[in-house]
Image: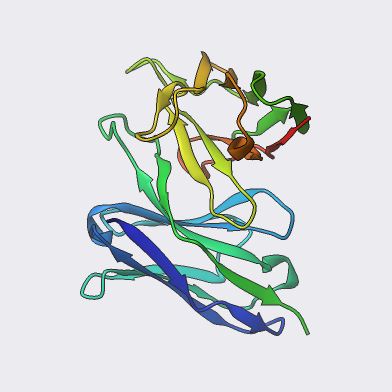
Length: 125
Length: 114
């Protein structure tokens, strides 16, 4: 069974750092496009970061320069290093697989077909 | 960035009745090269992660009940629940994956039982 399990969330003061992990099972992270999507309290969904199969990365403007996405192929795990955290970063952070059925069309993306249960990050003093 | 809007914000439907949710994109998400609409729908129940229901605007994900259907093209899309069941109470989101990221979501539509 394919599964994603996030960990690493918690309470952190503004300006602090956290590293989120997402352990995958049933498929390999490095042969898939993988994303972090967050959901603020009572809010909608925001795509925060993406790592392509080739290793290129994308960041939303709201986190660019502060967050870093990476993966460890030997552990089949995705990471999100979050620095200089702000209260507005408070959210549930979901790890999600980005499935692309037609990669022949350049510049297009995918939909999120597998999600973890999420890990809560609270930034507060 | 492509902006997604949804209507209504919320709706209450009687059990067994039809629920219709609309989604609009600020630019077309129909790709001429393959004639596909890069639009997905998700269901999120309280305390759970989102669940993929539909992709390519109208293709049901494996295991999704047949009462869920998607339609539309270009900039205007609809998710229909043909006969609302109690377990369908949730927030529903549309998402475009047409262009380079960000792949934006709509603000969500909450569906309740009347």
